[in-house]
Length: 329
Image 1 (tube, rainbow, N blue to C red):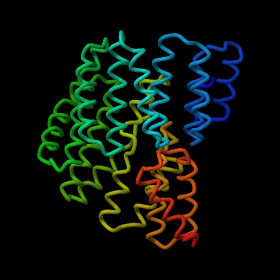
Image 2: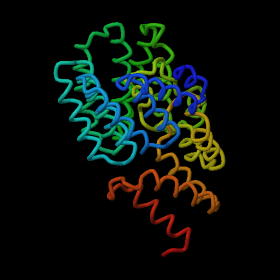
Image 3: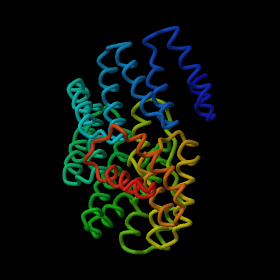
Image 4: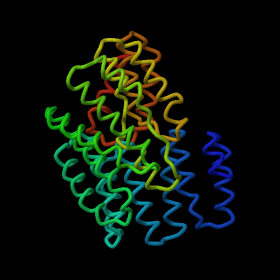
């Protein structure tokens, strides 16, 4: 019932049913689903509490692997990067004999490093993820893993100015799409589509990038288990259409896109809203001179990131901008 209500977007009813399941059987694996639903509602702090409950209710090897993995993922979204790696390393320690989860920890680490701008470390983690995932039991998924590897490492190429290298990886990923099994085809196609938009934006092909981004839509997890949920929430931020509008100077369209992402677009597909989206939207409101709206979004961002690492540039900048808007300097 909880799963059905989740698919229907009735999160409160889903949580109520998951809690009834947990009341009947304490170690029933609904705890982490409750955590994810609170995160969908951007109540990340309550989400962390339920992940802790998930691990304490049943200290099986698998629960400790997945619990620390999810907690490390969630801490990264909260700007707690040091704590994120502590949790991910704990997951890695518990998953020594499980090549699938051992590889998956490397994958999430790669995205944490990417989101933090540490692109060399990100590339190293993605390479290790790909090496390890080839030893997992999910052989039917090898083509989609190969595509993910091309796209993730290709995004790093773009960040480091290697556009030709990224274009080569894009062509390889596109050529592999016919090999993808039907269950993964929509997801793989969307991954490649987003990467294509990023390549076009990096080249300065603005109108072509807009056309491609308009075809992109983050896909919903096909199953509500931890691996699909986390895979579908990577990369952490896919706001390409908003960024290309901003690059074009069309701030109004960029704002509309961010408002859609935050308001309904991601949540309707059971995907998380990254806190940085509030920060990016606030800056655009500020550029438009819409001070009240900017203040609201900066406050939302800083409330979620209240315990984030103090040296993160977005946190420092948001605090300064909010103080300026409020006349506190």
